[in-house]
Image (cartoon, rainbow, N blue to C red):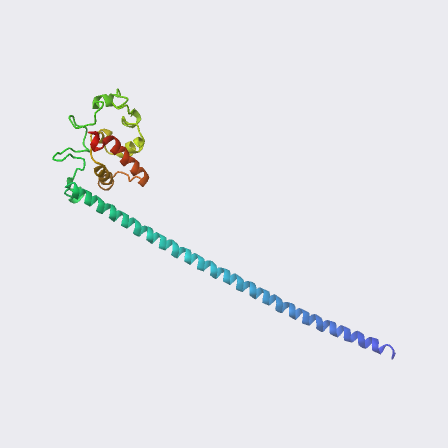
Length: 223
């Protein structure tokens, strides 16, 4: 019996140490799990905070860009209006309400209405008569420039389609075919047609093509 006592004591001690060790290990594991969960929660909270911060910064940047675009558009509109006002002043226009009846295409001292139906005897560039143009008999100008029957029998060079589509919303091509004015006046006229007559505003590129076309074929030196 005495020989069994040390063994029994050792067994009891082993069981006690094992149970205590397990309890300690379990406690450490739970503490570790809590620490991991806390770190994960903090990381998620930081990510959410950063996301909200990024969204706020993006919204502020979008608002800033929108405000810059608004101010730029207002400045461009004001500059365009001032340029038109100055051009009108150089042409002796009386700018009353609704344009004051100013006709930018009227020759000096004349009363020709460019938006009225075609009138006989109006100045025109050398070439086919209006009757021939309407009947489609003419195919080219005396200088050999072909006419495009799909676009009002206008000279068929670069810009004919843009000019025809933009300018014939409210009047026929005969209206501007009859004109021979300076580049400055054509430039003003394009702006006047947009601001006072409701012509759809062309892009800057298309506007330049239109101006070059009008000056090329209907400039002051073509009369």
